[in-house]
Length: 271
Image (tube, rainbow, N blue to C red; front, side, top):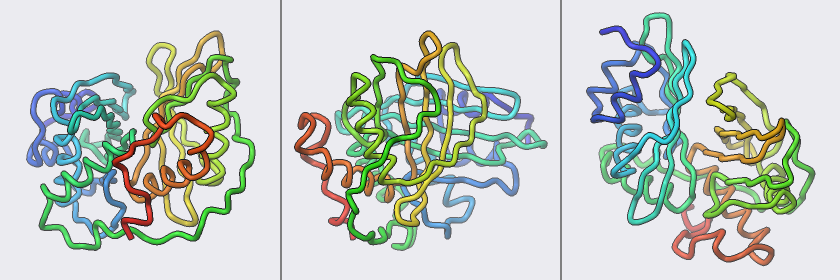
């Protein structure tokens, strides 16, 4: 395998992106975590084909941002699917051999995420039905608690949820949405890789919705020492869909209809 490292994944995504391209930069025991499925039965080759299909489904994609250090490369990809804007975040961790030891895929905007899932299901039609299974969840308790503030918030804070259509602002509304979201997915376990780009910082956390794993990647923008913008991406699709449906049920009468999509079915319709 030729020498690789941070910048390699961006180059592939910017020019062309095939399963062969991705396979050429993977370490032999690489771990790939797709966005559209959380099924743990995928082989390395199958997972690579899914991540490539996710990225290609973004259409005429553009690299919006890149965060790197000596062993990590995170790229934010803007795209459009069926007229809807979408954003994907790919996080690559490079190993001692120079290859990608781990690759994680995240998305934001729930309805485009669903369209991408459908496109991948078609492109990877040989995968077993288990790859697309959605596990039932108990009803949402509706309980709400304060969201943990990892950094001080600016008065003009905007929170771009990974599943909603528009940003919540100013700070009181942003905090309200954050409180409902964090009440649904439980205690956050942060993993800060200290990846920065100017006044932006990329942080990650994992949580769960009633035992089903959920991960988020967050681009945090700071102004005068306070957090002024949060742009979040989520994986995998099943728990992202559960989060969207539960937030919608809680907030549908409290925010503008533009926060949601008429075309997006609720979580239970996928069971």
